[in-house]
Image 1 (cartoon, helix red, strand yellow):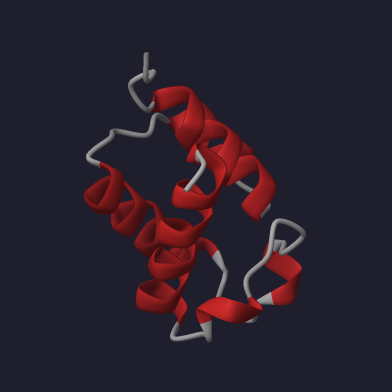
Image 2: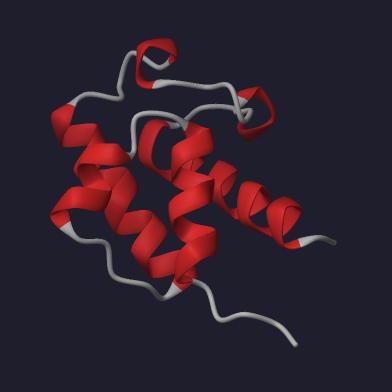
Length: 84
């Protein structure tokens, strides 16, 4: 499994936990406007789930940039330890 697949799979699980959506419906193209529960409160719930799943900490700037699954995956991949 590539890093991208690993991250996307776990991001989907975070979406399921935060918004009770089918993880298979979450794609790289998914944005906040696609999920009705993805509002400011839902965003914080999602961020908490992502931090727990990936054992990372997200700062305010990163939270502001997380407007799509593509951006979320990009931010998380940059925070994960690089594999040799």
